[in-house]
Length: 131
Image (cartoon, rainbow, N blue to C red):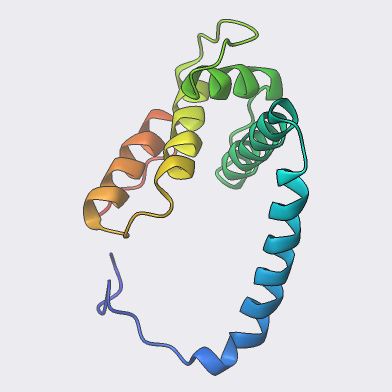
């Protein structure tokens, strides 16, 4: 959004082809492993990945939340029964943001999507104005 050519970036795919190929191999292996898991275990893997993403994203921004609170809040955002009631608004915000990104990652990137992510970021205390 701040780059003068956004959203029409240009790049040389030859520089990244090998990295993408390895990524696809690894992703396929991970996907195959997950498909072999029970539904409950697949749900646990998803929760663990979303919690890790929320914790890492928050740490990058200098925020540190309780893993237990993030876990409960993400469960609630996924429509599952949370382990506890979370009162901290920033924790709720980052949990909502990672769930929203997970649910919409395949949609075409747009200003509307970026702004909706920014609102989630604002609720988590990570707001930076987009123009």
